[in-house]
Length: 94
Image (tube, rainbow, N blue to C red):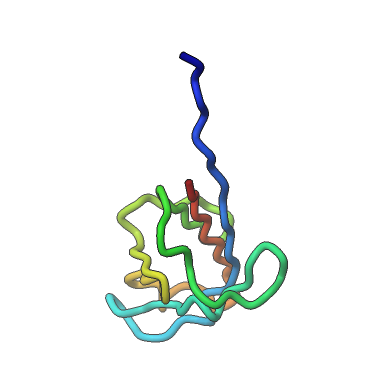
């Protein structure tokens, strides 16, 4: 029986900390504040994904740093970071 490799792809979204709202545990950035790989404004994050990676200032963050929904990413305490700091959220979809 042949081995069939699963289909995988990724979706990346970029923004900055300054696009977020809230303070402390409620700090979040809505999906519409991000742009996708084509440079177009995002409308939502993927509804179904295998996992996601969050990069803050090009540094990969551990899984306990954030939570994500289709409409926003929450980064508790992110409001104390430099406003111009870049973010990349990468979703691996199958």
